[in-house]
Image (cartoon, rainbow, N blue to C red; front, side):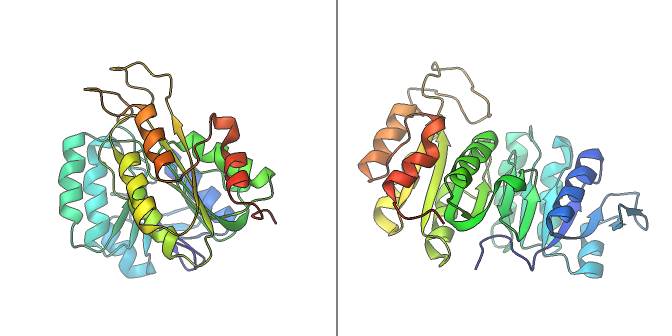
Length: 292
């Protein structure tokens, strides 16, 4: 049982501009069922063999799409998220960077009770190896196996996955949750899914400075997880008051420091890699016997 996406996923692409078209093609090449695109004003046309509809609702009605990936520009992305929820989409992955925080606060509140799971925004998406790709993640570096990967950082998601694959350790699902201050699926949400997934035996969690998500995740691991977790925290040398990469990666008011996150994780029994180059090996040392 894969989490979030699998062979039965029917993917809709919201925003069929150049980026949407490019990644829709890569997902289809990987074997994902890309069944529709939604782009106002282009309804009735086809792009790369994919039928285009003016609205998400029309696309869902015609194709049975149950997941979407959103490449809509920042000003309209929150509305695109809500349009997906109103159409009955089960999982929406929002790639868009730069969505105004107040727009996301409004969208997240509106999603309560809809039944749709949002991943992102400002994230690389999901890959369940050899089954489904939603987003912009390079699926060719993945391999099927027992390790779930969760990350706030897109590029460090790729780095961790590549290290695991080179060590012969495959992945169950790789999830980039995004680095914005307001996101849909959190560390705890993803950890809960992996804990319940019989195909996942261990988890790699990649956090970064800013906020308290990693400390909250450490508490969840200690109280609720039986499966082993290894971690890495990015931004260990970041100066206070400077935003590093993501909108949420900033130390402010003395909170959000890497040292506090590392201490919380280690207190919960989670080994923390000393550098990005050691993420895969840290898990391998913590949980022997994962490699195929």
